[in-house]
Length: 169
Image (tube, rainbow, N blue to C red):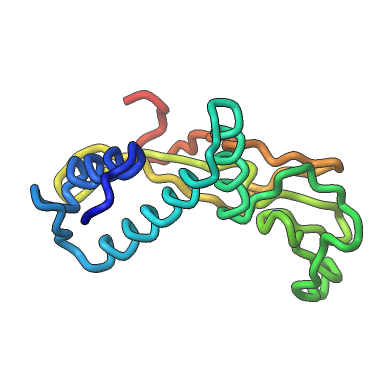
């Protein structure tokens, strides 16, 4: 006898179908997507069996999301144990990467987050449609002081080009 679907399963299968990953009989079109979705169903089963309620469910989801994404759950302290030596540079000496937040580094000039600013500009794709291009570069670094809580989203900044000098087209 087949186990009845719980709310998480029902919702997930409906979303898999809406995304175009399964047909009306819940047969997957792609093996890799199938593997990912079956993993998600397993995680949802663990979550359901834990019996979370309205207040613990969002907290647990947020905490799991941060840990599964290798993000810190508390501010960085800058203490020695948080750092891993990455390389030595002739001009800047030793460079260290933070073990808890991989975008944070330090050298003799101080600590910085390499993903502090994400730049964007306009470009035309092959079909002639205007699109935004997002990128980071040396200027994306922002200084870090401790304790440091990385913002959830980076600062976005328009980078004008000769062809598209204005933010608004």
